[in-house]
Length: 468
Image (tube, rainbow, N blue to C red):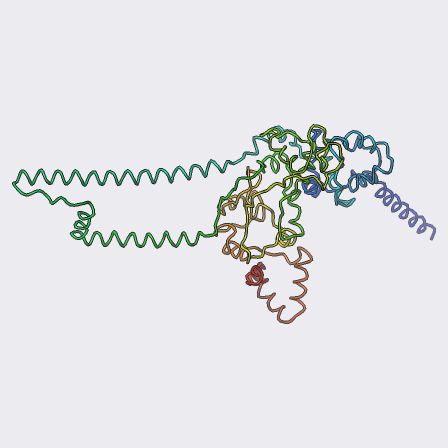
């Protein structure tokens, strides 16, 4: 009996030590660096690098060694910086004194303690080649100049018109030479010259004498006109490769590739709204209150943001309604001009599309519909052929054939896109409904005959799903 008591005490002691060890585990330990990388890109990458380089805020390399205020205070600092500063912690006060006056307050991040642990795990053990990658980012992030491509297409059309005019000139000249030679032969044979008639009369006579050939040529042009006309009608509303000029030369390649800012940092409403939204100037200022000079355009384009929101780059402060310098926050009374961005994607009014459904529920990536944004200078509508080339680079992209943003493109995707009914609450509820009704159970068995369930089988082809 005593031996059993000793064993029980030993087991309890071991459990106590294990629990104590877990409770005392640092927030820098035990996180998931893979999940942390995704969280870092979505929440932190716009202002911080995982190296010791300064971006908007300081580089995070070595954070574990220099943070001296404890785990709970670190969590509070990330979630609510101003509340953490009110605690009077000396280390946090030093951060406020050093950075806030120049760069402004860090925005509180909506991340849990466990998610912060994952981010710190990623920061503490970054990819081995991050240093080399940073050194060659500009080489690995080429920017495609779509304006040059459009100019090339325009020059091709000009050459076609030029050659057509040249052909007509040669044809008319040849007809004149042929007529002159015929008159010379007629004169030699003592025959009268050809009557002096106009080009149209001569052309009509030639057509009548070559009726079969003219009929074939006419039939060819009629068929060609029908085909060209049909293609033109089918192309109404298609704007593949459309990339409008913008009031500010925002370069997606610099932000999404070189600085590795996640698309959803700026277009944050994709998680809970129909629209991706155009980020306000306030979002731009999260970074550009500190970054006042661009790597391509210097200060010229960034100053346009400052003019819109009312920010004086020299003093690092916002202007009031009278244009006076010195206020700490942007003033609603400042009479600035809003940035008038030009829309790239504009679906018809009768079409319903929700980013939330596709991103949050469907788990789609931006590249599924928008292509490799990290190579763009300005926003554009990516051709379907270009998106298809990204299948190996971005898992989940489906090879499609219809033009981007057309009804056929959406239907083709819904017909091919497979669904995991255990991937989230939305599909789990659908699964429960199918299981709990006799008709639904039969439908579920029919859906699973090919061992997969597509969006189409769950109603993705119903007209009312996409049309008002």
